[in-house]
Length: 215
Image 1: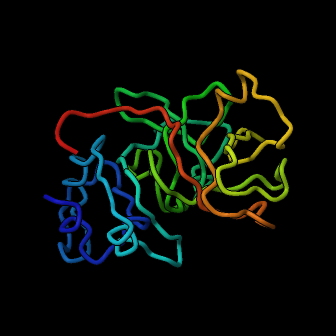
Image 2 (image 1 turned 135 degrees about the horizontal axis):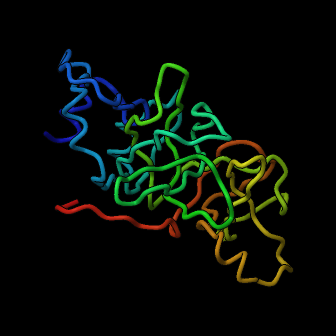
Image 3 (image 1 turned 135 degrees about the vertical axis):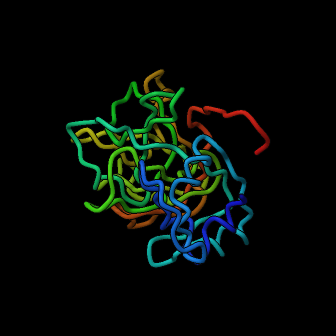
């Protein structure tokens, strides 16, 4: 089954495939719950045009990118399921099982960026799509190190209270091995006055984990 058929009238950034539900419900509403398990680990490549069609713009806008279906780690602690919001960096917990977690550290392997919002009605172990490469809205640090980032500035992972967000470094700052290790991508539109919001970046430094088959 292809993704568009699976989604029905749902949008990609609304999609959460519930864990362990075997009932196939209304096919017109994207409720093929158990069948969705087959998407785990798979990737899709979206053009700008198709990404916009698959966007619920009240949640956020999708752009040209690569999306991968991953499972939320069933047993993470310290942070909450509801900390998974649009633009939140997510990290690999178990690459063989495609488990990701919002629990952040500067030594964690970046999996990608969340495109949806998880609520109390969702569960750890659910499957969600995330952006693993390409243009994506990323949640910015509350107070950016460089107040007005410009196009092509490098984007760095920032970690506070065990959660990740995006930051940029000052122009005069020399690169260190730590800064290089947490680089996520680059700015592709001006971020003036955007601290604490979701802004567009190009993601090119997530840790890629592949599944068998054709993308």
